[in-house]
Image 1 (cartoon, rainbow, N blue to C red):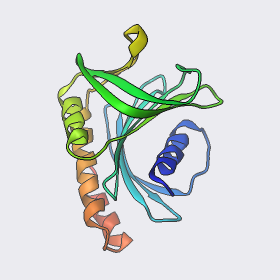
Image 2 (image 1 turned 60 degrees about the vertical axis):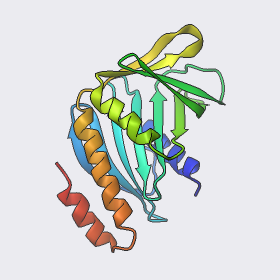
Image 3 (image 1 turned 30 degrees about the horizontal axis):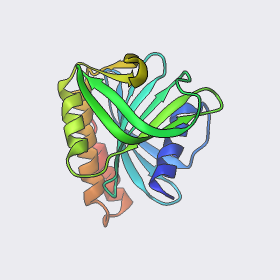
Length: 192
């Protein structure tokens, strides 16, 4: 399964009510409106750690890192904000510091849900982005042509959530040759 297909499968799970997906999910932290968990594909054993900020509206901001080191951002909005799928620049403001993530995949579901997937290219960009989120008070998804915010998430609780995301990744990265039972013990002891 390609990384993008896996990400979109996970995203569709978040967005579709009652949808069945063959995965085992272990919650690690619920703090403020953040949820951190580890997901394991039941068929392939592929593991990923996810930190999701879910707004009252159902709009989702998710950071995810996989056992192979792939790092990405997923945004899902309950309303349609663009007319069709395209690849473009994702603009975010973290406390008025602008982030431009080039080459993001923008999707529109038939149900009217808008989604964005950005695969971080490696290096330090993902860590720098997480540091800005941790130190910030809000992050806004920007509509570049009109210079307005489409949605803003509070970053309250982001420090604890993103620290737990890093702990989770350390466990699954180091666990590639460990039995699943041992990994589960480590993840369970990581809850908090």
